[in-house]
Image (cartoon, rainbow, N blue to C red):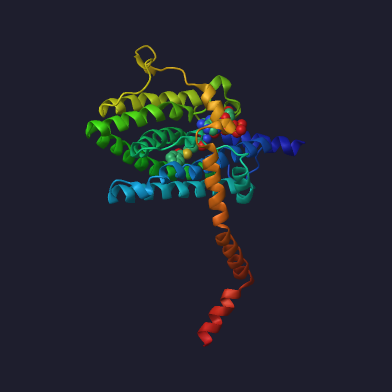
Length: 322
Ligand code: BYC
């Protein structure tokens, strides 16, 4: 009992003094499970998040656009891998996390259940979705769990390139022909509200925020980050001459922030329940990719077993002797 109190005291002191909690440190079970929940959802979001933009790799308008998009989508896969690795340090396995994604029981960001019917959607995702992700993730660079914080730093550097390439696509379309400008505006109209939903429910309805902020897993609340994103994005939209689809959007001198309209939380709930426009196809695409990759996992596991047994060293020696 005394020992337990000592461990709790030490954990709380580290949190208070902004020391990172590392995988081998003692931590409360709920701190561990909350991190596994958030980090694995985050990893799934990166992996599923490749699909909407991946849809345009073969149809990108120029070779330069194609190369950039390909690199961006590959970056997202890499982000997924950093995050799965960070979650694994908490004593969960990659297989467990994948199983939960593939059987539909794990959540991933609601935004990736929307379709990408035009090239402007690729621009809107980079500008808005990656833009929102950076706001959230810069804050997470100061999260209390060491491996998550370090993964975030690396991810943020790449996300800022993603955001700029998306913004540049939108800027080019907005300056182009009337048809291109309309395409950009239409994409902004469709992605704006789902992007605001990425930050999660209002603080008053956020189940996990209070405890996560106490443990410094989250450093800013859902509403604070959403407001920060809106404030910075309104000016970017103005700069390229596009209109944010919210009649209530207005600068509030007193608050020093933009006021904005209410999000359709009914739509958010429906997407979370699996009834968004693309929930089924996203899950099916992941299931298919997992089945198609079975031979790679099998080959790797045979390789690892052989390596452990030292088979390759024996083969190397035999090759030298020959
Ligand atoms: N979508 O109590 P709350 C990217 C869930 S990908 C789905 O506020 P919390 C990119 C929430 O999980 C970037 N579910 O939760 C990739 C919880 O459900 P459970 C993704 C959502 O954890 C490719 C419940 O609602 N970023 O950048 O305190 C291409 C109650 O919510 C959502 C991250 O994952 C949502 N939008 O706060 C381009 C960031 N919102 O677990 C770009 C890391 C809420 O009780 N995650 N829920 O079943 C976080 O910062 C936090 O987990 C959240 C939610 C702010 C998302």
